[in-house]
Length: 103
Image (cartoon, rainbow, N blue to C red):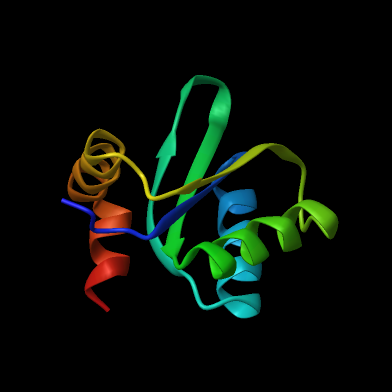
């Protein structure tokens, strides 16, 4: 599949914080919002994609100058087909992500 060169994941508490984190990443690096996933307790993980350098820069920017409380971050370079499928399926099932991605 190899849809994404790299994926950046940032976990925060709540939708408002997720939007703040995505906003910072999109403004500071050449990354593209893919989707978000909310778990019990309000933990929300946002997913961005781009080349490895841009994704790393976006995630590091949020870590070093957080707009909100950051729970966990990760950068996955050359994600597996299974990881890509998880992101794409989540994007299709998330109305918010689907609508955001259309624009």
